[in-house]
Picture 1 (tube, one colour):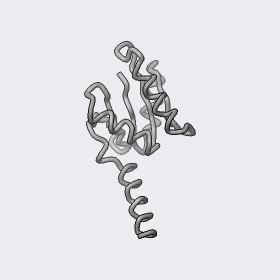
Picture 2 (cartoon, rainbow, N blue to C red):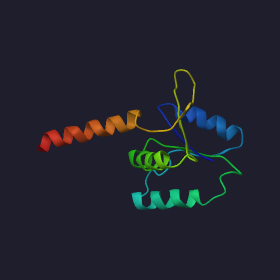
Picture 3 (cartoon, one colour):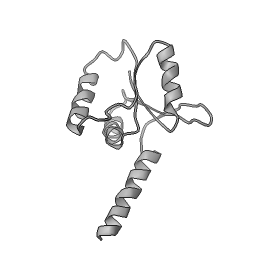
Length: 116
């Protein structure tokens, strides 16, 4: 299963997964052109995800948005929002209640106000 982990303190959760032998990519997509991030996601989806869990940690808005679109259309994608205060990592279906997206929308609105 492909599992996307987002949240302020996701690294400690991902480290636990590494310790237990899972495959983990933190800062997934950082430094790559969005076209290649999309191709990388496509390549990951071609793997037999029933055999091994793959955890992707990210705070990148474009990566979160790409997975947000996939998650709303597909039940096979599991999204975990890591809550650092309670050390809880519940599954979420939609990314809409995500501080990264909210922050990015706020910046976008500020830019519109400057040019509007």
